[in-house]
Image (cartoon, rainbow over all chains, first blue to last red; front, side, top):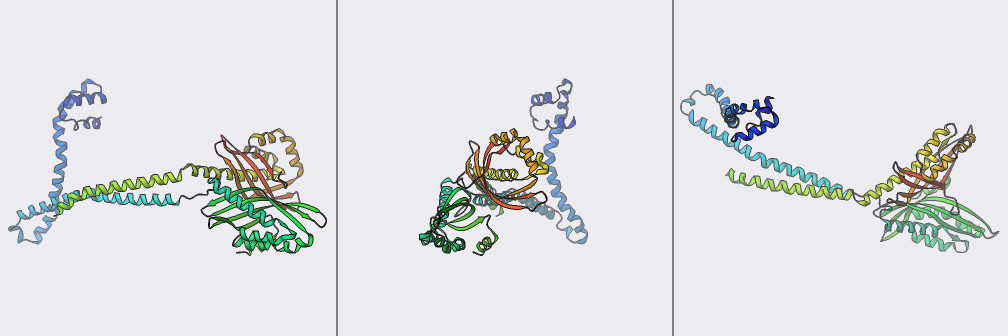
Length: 276
Length: 172
């Protein structure tokens, strides 16, 4: 109860009816009403003055502290300048405290501004770093990458024994870097086998998905079917493969720069791993 | 002397603070905008579909004949629609078959890709390369690599598998 009573009193010191109105809300009893009339005059002057004298008291107390111990050390001076010094000290201290209070806000604002600039810079770098995998999100680029990967795999691995060179030529155009080395490792046995068995191989991508697409790099997963026809005895057989393909955008064109086969024997994997 | 500077200090500092606040707000909004766009949300949905698809496929290709009931429950948990009703309808037969087979099958997804995602309709397709090791009771485990395709449907409890099957040669 006492803290509730005191608070409303200093705010509306001039008009009493308002105080009574406030009172009614907190304490609806009529008996309490007369009380503010008694308290008001006593508390109103006490609060506002309490702030000022405190500062004064501090200002006075400060010089008083060091002044007292210095007096005994310097016994000659107090005779001549006791009063001016106190006045000077008082003024200097008033000024410094005023300066202190005068600078506190600008300094705080500058510090705040610096913090906000730092925060803003952090936000901005984070905004710049928001890069994400655009596979499927960017449908045009996704379709393009999937199409290039499909074309590269189909053209590089489909061949006719009569013209294996044409296949290798196509592969050279569609593949780049590491993928060319991987391709020659995979295709090496074909050069000898194809003419020997008169092989015709058709490779078809049956399913594909782009797994990542960021900037000028992309990867895709391809499911591949392969139909091999041995024209010497017209035997044909099917096979299937799964491969992960890496693509890089070079001069506005996607090229395959990495190929990994899943479910291959250890020999071939080791051979492919040698490519850099 | 000091008073002149002091008079300017507060307004200048205030202007600085206001400008800095404006910059921070702008940068914050641009970051928020960049990281919460529709595209980012779609990309997040795709990642979620991929994750659920991978976990689901691994689930459905992993089975221990000693724990058939537990595994079938897990299949039910991760499926919906046609796939779920298929498991539900012939559960008893399937459970017996699996128990009789006396094999422990363990799978892991080597790679997977979302091939289609309609985030409005809540439908998606995922393809995956799965390495399965089949271990007959008391026998040697055999490893093989297969390719699967699954369809996912969004439910109230997240994405679930609504169809699953191997991608056979010949476009099946």
